Image (cartoon, rainbow, N blue to C red; front, side, top):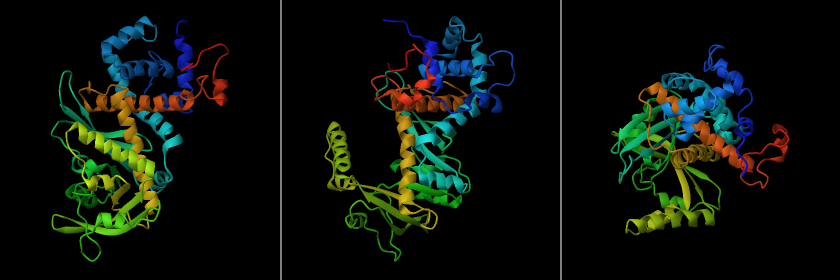
Length: 378
């Protein structure tokens, strides 16, 4: 087996990065002077060696020195990681925007409405039998910038109450964030929500004040055409207006969702209720955005953008070992998380470029390779 040509592999990987990424290292302050580690490519390889592989600071600097990549102390590497936060965030923004930003998300950006996806991921220490910690994240779209994180114990639930809000924000959340008091807090901050609805813990009212019967309305959907209904909900003895938006899944998608519910219930020795199985036939969300601002199709499009972020978090857990948060300060933790997001985006790009090609790359990208070099995945 031939030895791996790491320089050739790096050139392929660097070809997936957005145009201008090297110049941005200086523009954003990741590189501030010409002495020391002043090559953007070497700096990024150095940072990814630490973040993507799980090496400690000390292990990373030792390996980088052995490879003649850089000669730096572990404290110096940590300082470089902190200073690179804006640079890493810029690369994430460019990569995410290129292929994953929906029409509705672009519309929000044009209207200068910050789009923020909220999620949380659990962390279990070695040997633990359950959740020890939970990392709460707020990621801005399309820039994929981690603008807030918090580390709590296992009892720290998902809620919009935890994350600082700004006027004009559009916040996206899954069922875990579907709580009336938390949604009301978003509205009071003059922001809006698009949240996946939990049908049994978010009671709504019709315009006439009667209980809104979710399943009666869902069963009336025509084919796969999305539909929205005006509703209100009560929090702290005050009514808040919104819209219930829904679409029927395809038969295949519904059956897959129902089977997932059955498997999860079987592991717990439980039986799935008929209501949960029926709810799995649809996707329905609640939003405080008006129909004048975003149509029902655009609302569902916005929620789909949130799902893209969730896929990244899944990769962070399964592939990139986001099993602990090794940094102790806010600045270094944000930069570390930002680098993890960049690695996840690079993995997705590699899958697009090489995952379904027997020769390991897209033919139109062949000009990026030197004759005779191997490509990633070959």
